Image (cartoon, rainbow, N blue to C red):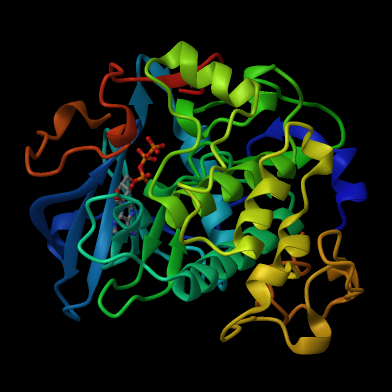
Length: 372
Ligand SMILES: Nc1ncnc2c1ncn2[C@@H]1O[C@H](COP(=O)(O)OP(=O)(O)OP(=O)(O)O)[C@@H](O)[C@H]1O
């Protein structure tokens, strides 16, 4: 879908479509062996690896509390399930296998992303530095997933290296986008300006309380690309105020020193995305046509003549998704659609959310509209 179509839409909220996935009330533990080590934890969930007793297959079990901070969160969880269902056949989005419900929790049994978080590729103390060719492949894959989400008028709103997982790390596998907990459906009728997220990844329009569109996710593509290429978080400051200021002034270090080993097309790609005015940012489909992403082996899900949407970035004329066959990039889902309190924290799993800004107290999340 073109930006023109999307920009008139603003954010309303949650998908309340009937779910196709059966919510099982049998005892989860009869069917899965749960490993004690946490894979991760976030604002709303604890995620643990589990093994299906019948098949030996590995999964990730995401335990979501039905009530958090005294509020019923079932609608949010329903929404997260509905988004995962909508994206079911997109290989860039984590697959939802099963759902269980207990008295206090809903358990999402997800495809297991054995390679962990992309965040681990963004840290300066990495033994090896991931090459630009690999970064191009990973960014392409994120954009392919994002194209499909945006074509379905869903904005992720929490894209960050902690929510981009990898199917494997050695060899470097494929992208799996996770955590649709604060994603929202864009609607014509209403708009939402508040949302929460992690401070250093917030787009200026969120800080400014301006309407949110799909372009908000595109800011995050710029941030993720910057982090993969430079091993630095572009906006993080000494404290939360400095981080806000850096974001609102788009104060980014593009120095020779920081970009010493980064190609010019890669730098150009980031500079086109880290733009204050959301309307000037290219769409996910535009980005796929950028010169930087044209290099190396292309792993387009679309056929060549079915490439996603128009190209604002490169000027290449390509086909729009509206004209596309449903079997294109979204494998049928695009156009054919219409607290962790009870789970003891595993000390071996430290949240890496704030690794770039350890000085800030948890949570540094921006929570003007706390959803749950
Ligand atoms: N399918 C998976 N395979 C492997 N690890 C996973 C999987 N899903 C989630 N994780 C790990 O668990 C962490 C938390 O998961 P997730 O982001 O879905 O939880 P959340 O509570 O919704 O997070 P947030 O606070 O960002 O909203 C992820 O960052 C990742 O490290």
